[in-house]
Length: 302
Image 1 (tube, rainbow, N blue to C red):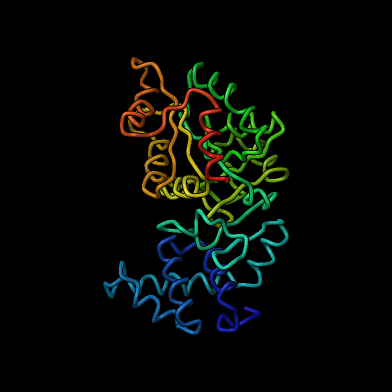
Image 2 (cartoon, one colour):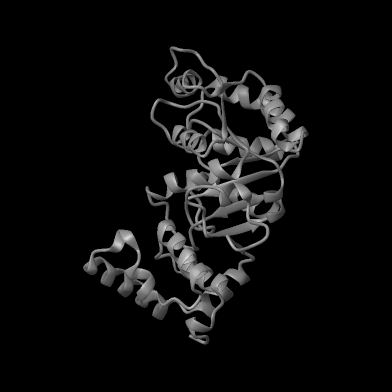
């Protein structure tokens, strides 16, 4: 392996386990808490104290999975791979770790970053919406994004189809900053049609993932990804959303963490306005212009 796992400092041990890709976000949190309390705590003790794995057979399976990963993916080889790909690694122990994540229920312990990591220091607004936006949704973005960008707001979205892709593209087109949070490894593009946009953002903006290189777009990755989008920003703006959509998951996660949620009202006969209209009915702020968003955000900046 080139280096004994026991010789690693806590930060490197956390990074190593994140790079291996066999630890869930919940288990990564457990690792962090265990090593914060005792940096020399053994993996056997950690697994034994992991509540979801209280069943002995599950504990044995987890330990076997970890041991297999250790033998196949040595720390130095993985570290060199990420370094050679210019991937920066941010952990919950680092000075530049976003406060929004720090104060959330399930903060990401390790995230992989490609691009300008300084964008995390800027005031951020998450903007989400339908993967199949109407002409109305597109017009709303065209009207709202230029004033937001002009005020130095960094726009955060999920590099998915539709509204996400348009948020990133229009932010860049208006000379602004944007962050994409994805549910795959940084070397995987999903959907494939956003591959060139993702490469551009990794070079000039910022793309973040909680998942290691090679991680595929598993279905369960995306609700977890949504919590990072919701908690990174001061607020979340929903443009268009059906009654049951990933955008509403993101909005509800933001609400659960006591963050502001803005929604653009829509035609009551449109299925893509059902979600946003319901959010407004439930108490989300109804916004009719970028000014409405900026006025509220500036109270938090100050």
